[in-house]
Amino acid sequence: MNKLYILRGSDSEGRDAYAKISKLRNCFDSDKLSDLREKITNVLKEGKKKVVVVSGKFDRFYLMQPYLELARKYRYEVQVLRLPGLNGDTYGGETHVE
Image (cartoon, rainbow, N blue to C red):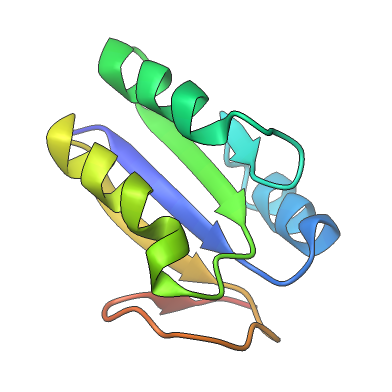
C-alpha cells in the first residue's frame, strides 16, 4: 500500500533535516509551496509514488485535515510524525520523533 507521511514541526529546517536523516523522499513543504494542496492532489491521484511526505507546521488539526482526506480518497496509508517543540493540537495515533 502507498503511504503518506504528514511531518509536523515548528520550523522547516528541522523538518528538512528529519526527512533527510530518515531518507524520506518525495517531500513537499508547505512553507515552500504556495499550491501545496494542488500538487499533493495530483501526486496522490497518479498513485505512482509509493511514499509521499507533506511537511508543514500543522500546529492545528484543520491544517492537515485536507491531506488526511486526500489520503483516504486515493487509498494512501497515513502516518503522522510530530517533531519536538511543536505546540498545538495533537492527533490521535501520531508518532513523536526526536
